[in-house]
Length: 124
Image 1 (cartoon, one colour):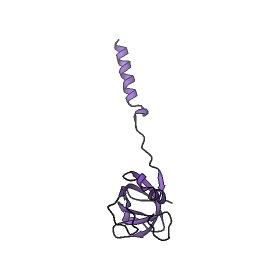
Image 2 (cartoon, rainbow, N blue to C red):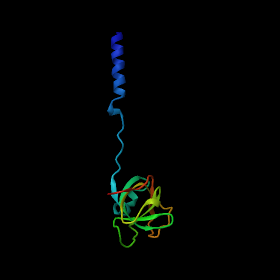
Image 3 (cartoon, rainbow, N blue to C red):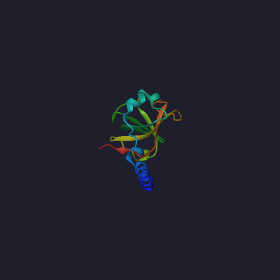
């Protein structure tokens, strides 16, 4: 009887440490600026990753696009938050943060902007 209790306890202890009980980190898909701005309502208040280029620096925010150069349109993405001061033009970046509705009067009249939650990463 004692051996059975010890064995059951040992099995329960091993099961509690098994990998099936741990949570793998959730992978956040990588989107283009256009995917986000054309379908912004699908991304509002969600944690997202976006790849793109800086095309315009303003005092408190940046404008990102799928293209490295060109005219600014309402489909470009205003960006605020952590690390915007280190972003350089003509380099492609991965940005991660939350898409916010309103709260920023961007020069391209986009009502949405990305609030960064971590520093941008250059894509090499």
